[in-house]
Length: 325
Image (cartoon, rainbow, N blue to C red; front, side, top):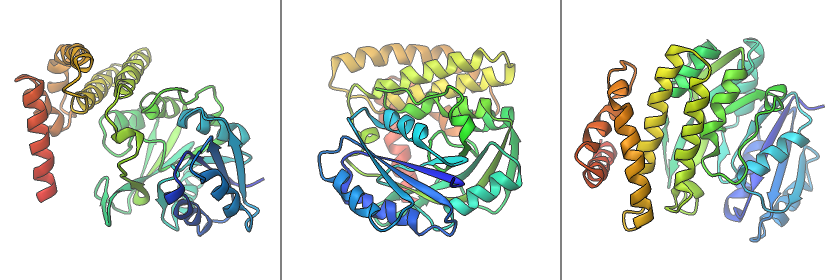
């Protein structure tokens, strides 16, 4: 029985898969199994996965009909033999100490989840998600939830985290058929955990590529707002005033993200955006009065008061300013 199961869903990523797999096989921590879940690829990715598995017994390849990223992750969890589970997207790659770092954090702190930061990779450049340091933060479930909801030391993505396998089999599953699946999943894992060890080293490399689902403008962008609403309702149902306040910020953050990503030439998108904008305005006073609300959210809320087009213009100007720094 391996200590760690590394689950890698695969769908039409032939150009990226080998680098991803090689980064896992080169880990300083070697007591793991690598589960490659071919989710009905049509570009030769499945055959490449078979080839990459030939010389290393730790690699196991599963071929299944296409069901989407959530379905592939759920499938991987069901077939995992390890005590702990981590997810890696097949177009990303990890630093050589990724598994060792997360494993040490989790075991030494008797935690249910350990985390690390990621680098956003654009071409040959890498940008850390947060300013990295060597400090390790040990949080209880509530502290960690608040950190996630305010976008502080824990990010919403499934990657960059190591989970006790029991946690991933507690009835929480990634929502099949939905994009942006982490929005209503990561918080549920944290809510079920007792303790989290939060590391601040950027050891996961998240590749920004044009063909990625999350960078396409389509109706699926509204999966994000739908899942954010589900998350908000679930968080409020926990009955904690602090978490309920943070949940409002979390809802508004994701709605704002959808509003700056919709197709402005689509009447349907504009009609749905109107409803999202109205909801954001309903929560804006509460979010603006919350001292933990990040500055960029405050600026976005003020910009939205002048209409969707001005908000989009202001956001693009803000992003350009950050790039030039």
